Image (cartoon, rainbow, N blue to C red; front, side, top):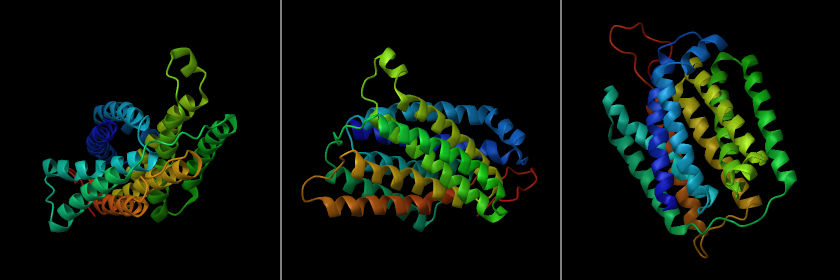
Length: 280
């Protein structure tokens, strides 16, 4: 059930990516006001609704599966985006279909090798570190404004991915969902703030440069970072004797997802002026 929820979350996130990329490409204004206009579009709002659905499914998956499996499964959202790209008139070649198959193969290997979620308890200090990480990522997002134009999109994508990683880690350490307990849980607020920061940075990255690179960096940030935290601090592990299979499956799934990142690109509709980065 946990793996099914993770895969369903990947479908929701993949469809959200298509809608959000289309909204971002329709507004060339790269200022903060322009980003806010993107976020206010119905397509971006529909994408957010799908993101919320995906987040709920992700939280369910995190209650029974290790972080490295859930986050690698979420990388399959790019396979969903690749298939959905046919609706946008993008043809998938042999290499791209091979990457879709590789994502599925990597996830199958992870499913075979993953043990149960770790049970290492975390204290108040760990929760404070998540607050600190959220603040640092917010400052890093602001600092990207000083980067060169070529580096801005990938850096924003990486910040967005790391922020989504904080969301996953925060969701993982929430164990009591009673309303009063939940409202007193710092991890709830780091999840909400980091999620908002991630969506804002990703929307900005979609406007400012190559969606291919921005999405690839997002995938790396949201998979590798929480996977390492899960293994090193939260007690995640593979089944006995399946460590190499788990590592191989993770690397295959993430590498194939990065290859598929170019399907975050949305071509400009006929009759519209071409955008600065309308194709790979």
